[in-house]
Image (cartoon, rainbow, N blue to C red):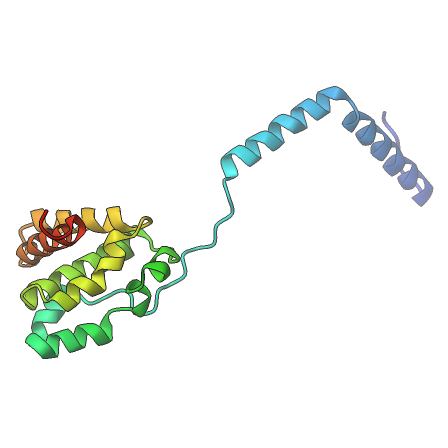
Length: 176
C-alpha cells in the first residue's frame, strides 16, 4: 500500500481509498460487535446525565459557635432562625425537589439541632425542620446526621440528642 503523493490528485485517490477501506470495515459483523460492546459499556457506566447540585439560597448555615456568639435568646433567637433558615427547606415539596449534597444536609441538620437546643426545643424550630427530616430524599441522611452529632462530645451534642428525640416523637404521632 505504499503510495507516494506528488499531486493533489494523488492525495484525493489516497483519501478515497482510506474512506473505502474504512467503510468496508465498518460494514463487517466484527466491527458491529466491537462497536456494540463499546456502546453498551458506555451506556452502562455513564449513568443518567445529572446537573451539578444547584446551590440552595441560604446554605451553608452558621455553626453553633456563631449562634452562641450572637447571644440571642428566646424570641430573638427564634426570629433570627426564621429569617436565616432557607424557605426551600421548609416545604415538603420544595425539599424533595432540591439536590442537596451530604454536606448541605449535615449543615442544615446541625443548624436545626443547635437552634433547637438553644431555644429549649421550641416547637417552631421543630416544625420548620420537619420537612427536611421526613423527606423521602434527604430524611434518612438528616436523621443520621443528627444521630452523629448527638454521639459527639461537642456542646451541640445534647441539643442534637434532644432534638432527635423530639422529631422522632413527632414522627411516631401522639400517644405512641
